[in-house]
Length: 362
Image (cartoon, rainbow, N blue to C red; front, side):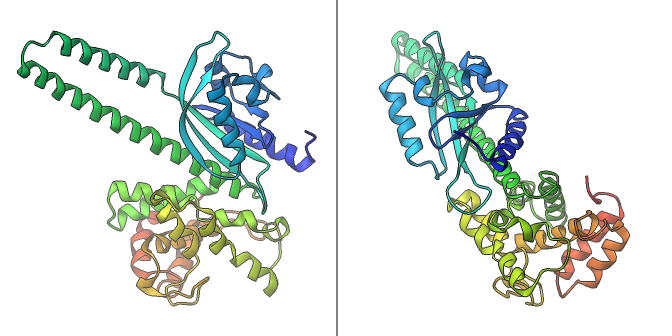
């Protein structure tokens, strides 16, 4: 497959990102060929990275069960998928894994590539087998109902631990997918990655200061990462335009809010992210977009992201402006309290800036 210059640049950018992950990861094209594989995946598969590059997945999975799964994944190339699977090694062994695949879109239309993350769960599978074997052995040796009941109770505790571990693994996979999607949405910006991580940090800190629990604040922070995911559908020339936008250009730019809501999965995990994506440009006085919501009608999460996104925009250099000092940005936030921003949130956020708990660009 011959790649365009833009595709080649996109592949290089995401290859660098995949190499930094602490799990196996690869980039495949629509034909199922491996465009890039990171070192962790190469180690997992028992193959050199050079051997994997350009290899079709059907060449790796010789068995009928593996081929059926690959055919199904390629048939649903533009859909997100997560499942337990395996990686065949040259010596005939299989490595059990959790595979999470997401289409990679940088513009409207079908995805040219798919990002796949792979988590090795061999140790968990071995632990399950050891636990199952221990249970079988005790069951065989137990002479009384009491002994069997005690062993069942122990096994139940072990099963609960495995469920908690599985839940944590799935949560980590979801967070990794969030970061990948967020970086893809920011791929046209020179501040790629840094902006979304700043927004995550600022949103989490403000949420805590506003009274949310640690778990609620952490989830809000992860969801805030995806606030501008709808910009995938905004043309490059608008995102990089150094001067003011025309009314028609503003109309296109504002669509990134509703597009962001549509892009995100309907699963409950992304419910907060959907509310933020749609409503993070609503103003407290009702002058924002896309729905003209005001006051408490604006989702609380979106109100928080509205404030920290404005602060980050003010204190970060952009194509059309230099970075503002934190004190000047604070004055601007105070002037917008009760109009653009919820006044109570401004009152909570400003002391965090003035005390150095939060600041400008990280």
